[in-house]
Length: 327
Ligand code: PBG
Image (cartoon, rainbow, N blue to C red; front, side, top):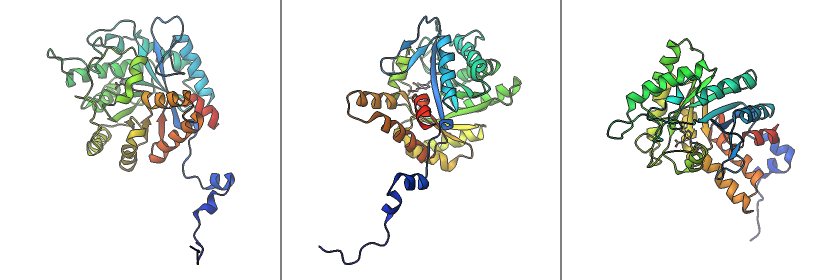
């Protein structure tokens, strides 16, 4: 077949070379957009690699400070701290102990980089309970929403007292943002921000994370985390968290939930964060280790796609490395 009239509209004109492509790129990922999740474990003598998360370790208090420093030197926008305590109990006492490992870690990291980056902490009980659930249990073994809220209120104040600038309630209890906000305000921390895990799904992609925190969970979290089948429900959760005073809203996981990230970006009048979770990281690392993917390319492509969907911030285990590459 001969082409009688060649096209006059040619989108390829703007793809011809790297300079043109750079000029018209709609989305970019800058180091400041990235937040690095970090794990610290009480009583550890040496950093301990997490086998299902190649490149990620459980830190000692010293190695945590160093990792925080390196991330911030690379320009990473923030740090999200998780901690594994030496002892666990039914109510997660270590979470509210001012000398508990998470509160100590917040204090350490704030002293190290608090002027140059944003120190955040996961506000949840699952690392601290001996049953591994995100809250306290009723005698029947259900997660008791309102009793858990009282623990979250105390934990928020303990984190803020330790110097935390942003707390991230991630337990998906009803009313958690309002309770945390009120507790912070009552305790004289009106300027501590709440990053609300607004749409957090009951996801199989959290598997490697549970290794990273030595999770004690048997069963699942389906009575509090969201059903992956639901999107309208995410809109409702987002609206509730905004009403309750969330300063930032988060969608989690990210890559299988980009439609939810987009909806959040359209609905929210606050910054939207997305968490590229442990299983998303592990999938790419595992495929790359077999030579099945170009790792460096896929890392940046995945982060770009999350930004393109509408996330202002991306929590990712690649934050330091990606920031170094993007600087
Ligand atoms: C709960 C929490 C989880 C993750 C972050 N906060 C685990 C869960 O809900 O089971 C998962 C993060 C990841 O997979 O990278 N404190």
